[in-house]
Amino acid sequence: MRRFYIIYIFCSINLFLLASCALRQQEAMPFDADSTSIDSSANVMRVAVMPTMGCMPLYYAVRSGLADSLGVRIRLLRFQAQMDIDTAILRGHADIAYTDLIRSARLAKDTEVIPFAACNEPLSLISLKTKRVKRVNQMKEQMIAISRLSATDYWCDRMLDSTGTSHDDIYRPQVNDVWLRAEMIRQGLVDAAMMGEPFATWMTLLGHRRLFRTQRGQTRLYAWVACGKATEERQRAFRHLLDSAAVLCSKDSETGLMRDILKQEYQLPPALADTLVLPAHAATFDIRQSDVEEARRWLDNIKTKY
Image 1 (cartoon, rainbow, N blue to C red):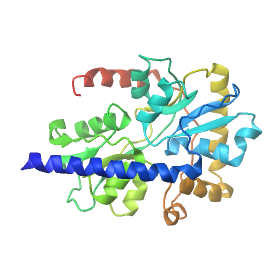
Image 2: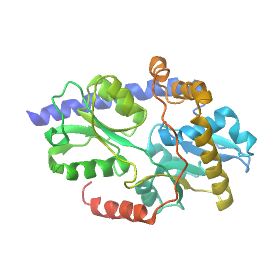
Image 3: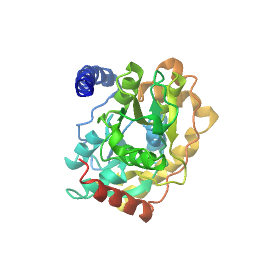
Image 4: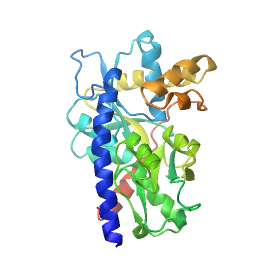
């Protein structure tokens, strides 16, 4: 009976993904979500981004005119999933991309990828509010949506280990699209999901439970990576832009623009975007060699898993 239940759930997920992907493509059109176009100007940096808090300063830099004022020409390539960013890197569509050290280590086998700036991107485990689950070790035989071989997969492992939960007791359907991961929690199609901000907070405001959250100072996996023709000079200019934007976008005077970005780029419901507590954004960090080694070590150990 359990086998048929799992098959039913996965069929439901696939149908939901197909319908939602079509809807998301239509919704993205007004926001210039041209993730495959290539700017012919050699001076324009093509940057692959996702709706994460780590990318928020860059959205702000472009929308506010800060990038132009600093002489940094940016063309945003908007994606909903790290897997699609991988494709953009491999096909030479992006000069700089937002990803994590696990995925960049895998990509480095096929193309030149250089992590040059780290971010403190928090991840949370959000559990469906209809489940009587208050702790991670109560999640036996439940489904946690993740993106495989990524930071969400890594932190799911760390979370299970820290709570003494057997990995074999948890099903991990792959849901790469960060917006769909949140929508599937809303629709009750998965028991839980590893989610970043602002989607994790959105789900808690809807009554779903946050059972786990990464903490500052732990392994920093999310990073900006250079690919293509992103020279060290362009990396420095880009990082200076990010750090300048992080300071400016945290000011109270910029609240209105930040909420507009949440509505248009992150596609949060207007009522939520207008009331969400906006976090203070920090400058980027240097890549720590210990984090690079941790990502590679985990990746080497996980090869037999999939």
